[in-house]
Amino acid sequence: MTELFSKSARDALLGPLLDSGWEIDSDGDVLEKTFTFGDFTEAFAFMTRAALWAEKWDHHPDWSNSYKTVNVRLTTHDMGGLTSLDAKLARKMDQLLT
Image 1 (cartoon, rainbow, N blue to C red):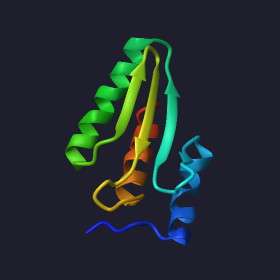
Image 2 (cartoon, rainbow, N blue to C red):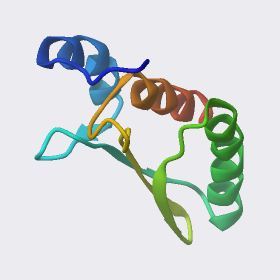
Image 3 (cartoon, helix red, strand yellow):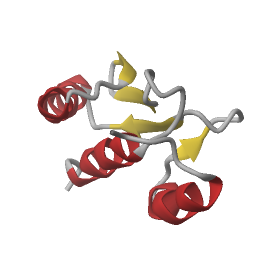
């Protein structure tokens, strides 16, 4: 079963994500990032690739798309905060950019 991150685990495991532009919301329960692409097609392609991983892992982002921008918010709703699933999906989203 997935558990909420402790403060020390969150700092250690999310550090590289924070270095790559992810942010933790003021409540400490959501990991968020805005991705900007060259155009709508690139943004939508990114969302499609990310959606396949989210479905595979049964962990779905809260996200929105406006033209070439994708806003992503990750949290584990049934746990009420951040877990390893959020970090895993955030890392995958960053990998999809390369």
